[in-house]
Length: 288
Image 1 (cartoon, one colour):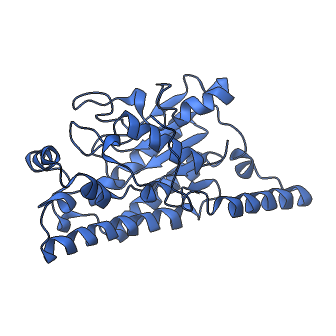
Image 2 (spheres, rainbow, N blue to C red; image 1 turned 180 degrees about the vertical axis):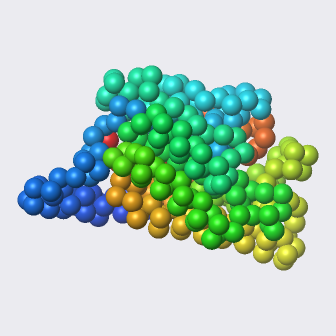
Image 3 (cartoon, one colour; image 1 turned 120 degrees about the horizontal axis):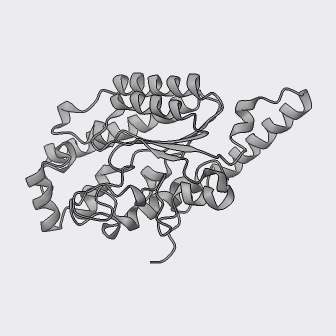
């Protein structure tokens, strides 16, 4: 498999500006002798971490038939082939070994995030990754998607829990993948269509996958817009917390392909997909 790089002009476009901003802030702190522990936390390679999220972060179907493969998850996975955040950090700080906790739960929505955040607080970790929201948009129907205002309230509650319990921890927030691209990539695959229908997978987006009717096309666009709205919330709320880093929609913008999607459910990332997710998110994180 060839090395995977984020799309040109998407991932790297904001990085120089953000680096300059961070350097400027660091200089200001040193000149005024007001060095804050929270600011220092993001510059230090962590010795412990926790992953929060849903089945994507739980590694569902990444290595087998309808099982969680947590060793292959993009965040805390131990499989060296995936090159997760954990294995990359382990190469730089051996003290993190054995101190990576995965609290992601298959099927989790943003409403479940605060409970996961509380578990991370109890472990007193120094680094937290968050990927949540796909299940808030991928529901049985368009009408059952989580309202944007509710999504924000619940995400903010989890962030407040992390800030109050782990004020110095670095928090990375991934954007939600573009689920309309999943439809686009696999809509002409008969096996994918059969599994989507039989298992009732993400029917808000994937119902009637071959239909070109105006109503179905409009529905797909509205569901995609809901994901965009969620990502806007993630970015805005994250920016309110001094140790939080959003990926600038790098995951949403990434043009994943069929070979990176599980052939068991045609929905979750397989090993190749988890590897890409690890690469894209780490490149757009804290720069450790």
